[in-house]
Amino acid sequence: MRPATLVRLALAGTRTDTARVVLTALSALLATLAGLAALTVLAIEKPAGDAWAQSEQYRNALLREPGLRGGTAFALLMLMVPVLALAGQCARLGAPARDRRLAALRLAGATPGQVTRLVVLETGVAALFGTLAGLGVYLVGRDLLHRPDARGQLALPTDVLPSTGALAGVVLGLPVVAALATALMLRTVTTSPLGVTRKAARERGPGPWAGLLIGFGVVSFAMVRSVAFRLDSNGEQAWLLPMLFVVGALAAMVGVVIGTGWISYHCGRLLRRYARRPAALLAAGRLMADPWAGSRTFAALLAALIFGGGAAAQRAYFATKDEIEREQSRLLGADFGGNPFYLSTMDLVDGAVAVAILIAAGGLIVALVEGIVARRRAYAALVATGVPRATLGRSVAWQALAPAVPAILLALSVGTVLGRGLGGETVSTGVSSTGVCEATAALCDDPATRDQYTRIVYSPDVQRAVPVPLEHLAWLGAGAVVAVLLTIGVGLVFLRASTAMDELRTT
Image 1: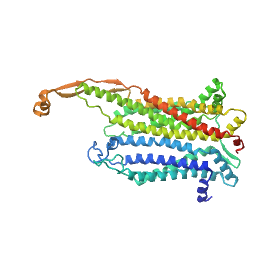
Image 2: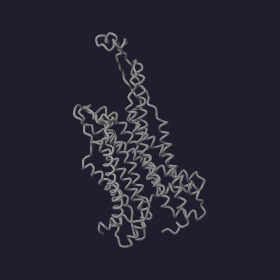
Image 3: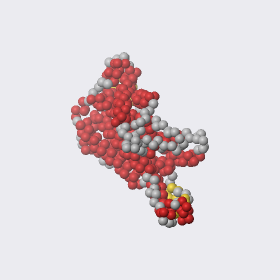
Image 4: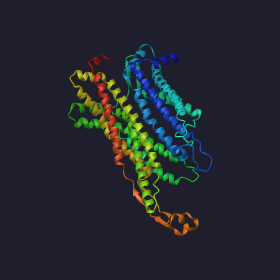
């Protein structure tokens, strides 16, 4: 089969296939913008001078200080996680119709390898369109946002550009990763002229092995502070700190996402044992038949909540530290007003978490609608046998909420533990001293007389426990539950159209 024919067949299909390509391209566009933003931050050159020299052409301290740029870039890269999860959900949209189209191609004489390459090419081409559009948006936005203020300072690093190799790596690398991921997911799929079969049957529920990954992530974050204190002064082991941070965060995130499968299965068992209503029993059967559906559906949301829980713990640490510094400054007879830099930085992090939750909500909607459309014949058959549509609607709600609520609590708990392990559970100020001049302003300003009226005031070491940010975590959890409820509402709209009697004739 010629490459041009493969491309033409990859872009062919119904309106659902077109929507899948568009949504996949949109996800790739968002991921490209996040990746290019992170590379732009890393491309800022360190100014000449000592180790404390800052890039004064930027207004934001996150861009001025070289030591803070790595964390800023990492936070931008973390935004790619919910976006890539959204792309994975979009790739499953309209799967039954695509399976029938692939079976028709096999019936027309295409080989299994050609069909697999066709599906891989479809995802890769859609992602390539998205990355190219993302590169265009990035370059245009870079010119539009380059607006120095009266002092010549910039709000964003629009004066630097990543290297050509880095740009090409993002624009071409994301489609390659998407294509490889699609090929990996298709390894258990067999396409024949009679249809598509998946050799992924599970006879027993998933085991609790995800707890090992969560424990590894918590231990890695707990080691970050001790490793930071023991690093050699010459920096020979400086690579160990970011490795612990990145590996620990990914391990905990993967553990929570995989653990949702275990939660879904056991929620189904509990519902099957104790539920008495038909809606809960139908949901129990679905949860036990496909426990990994919860992991696929809530992956992006749980990743955002882990990040949000860690950010809430860090905010509580910085707020406690700021409060102690203010109290000490008042005891010393001054009011330094604390250091608002870290708290204002956490405001930006909270904004990033909100964006990630919004993106994850989009992925939830796509996943739930795709599941309803994929099982529309089964739902239509239930309605034809006398099951009310309201019962099916409650069943969909049970199926979404039963694993979502404990998974949300788990993600917030793990994120909070990671954040407290990174910042510590107590804040210690140490013993400090300052000179206080007890005279008129004229005498204190004169170097010849200032020392005569100056006395040294000592402040004791203050240790205070960092509170658990229950209110912040409650808002995050409530926002996540509201996102799930809105998703259920959208899904119920599609449920009514998918339970029409005409769906029984769908092949």
